[in-house]
Length: 412
Length: 113
Image (tube, rainbow over all chains, first blue to last red; front, side, top):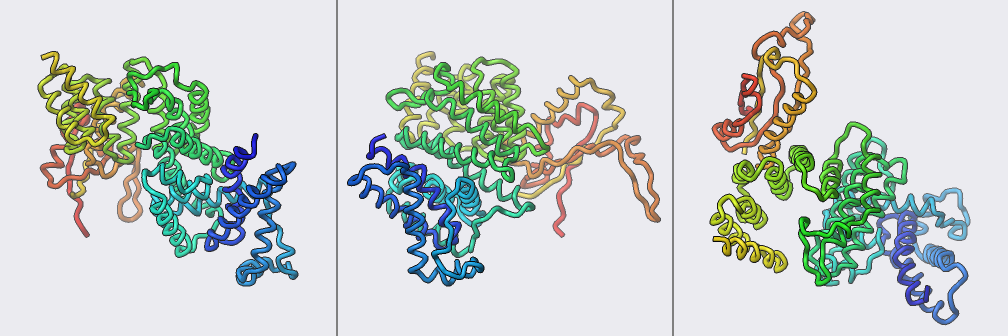
């Protein structure tokens, strides 16, 4: 790999490791110092490698430089006296004695503990995702801004506030105690789920970036499955869900960037390897008594990897949605349940169910009613599609809705 | 929105012995009905199904095996729904599969203590 590509690549993989280890050592209140030392290390690499050429082992070089910079900082700075010295009681000789542990075990542990610190219930989910992208995934500010469709200043402000919150809540970087692990893990999974969805459903046209977000969410979830304390069935279920969804990533968009609806997708573009991976984690998730919402959503996503329409498929999806909704309501789940209902029981009964939802002013609700009335009462269907067009703000969906109206009107 | 409990009562004998297929069909009907309420965002708690076996305790530590499965109006289970008024809550009970077994839905508002 050439220099120009190697450094960004290493930045992506190593920045987060160095930051996590240093932050764990210094404490969350010094998170910016940890980030600065990691950034300085990469700055030094950019300068020196350009002149002297690549070191024999670039990663080891980065770790050595990061360690030295951290030690120098500690020597110069009062945090050593206030914080670290107090903890390192047996080291009498000061900073020379500090061992900065960049072993793979400590890197992994620090990153996992960092995940729990960032996904703390005291922090808003938007801030959690921003911090996760910066600290756990090593994303640049500009990339985060692109993903959220906003500018760098906004992201900087958001991250600054989030870090303030980490400090003021005095959150420690450690594994939660055994009694709390389930509830804390739930918060971590929720953030990873949102991170994945941000990539999967984002309106951003930056396809490579969106795919990166999904891959990062999957990598972090995978890390949780590899640790004994965090390898719970709900984690495997979430990873199964992500794998099934990601398998359709390339089939969902055409070369012009237009959305392709599920029914019109070319199944040969579905990624068989990811589907198999999803099945693998779904099997691993099938233990214990707790049926999480990720189990149910993974089940729904699994049925969607089978393209053929059959009664069993839609009946299973309907029952999974029934169960999911009884755990947690969301308007999208209610709409999807009604769609599955129409596939399993027919449009006429589904219309009765749909009319009960009363999600007026929701364009997807109008679109669903349009879909259900098509072929049953075309005049009503046109009316609903037109309502949907009026409420909808995405140009992409407008094209699809207009096509439906034209098709129905040409029939009457 | 207020919370109302739905108590499902029926005669266990009326339910009879069901084959696994019948059991599955029955569960599916219940799930459809509860799913429909949940899809309207009117399910407050998915409640519980009760096991027919049980004990009845009376003063003086007198414990008897539950004779209540013998009576016509055993409680089979419950859910909690959200509604503005009791009439609205009653409307949500429409289509409840308990009616097929000749059972009843008792709709009760929670009292604020």
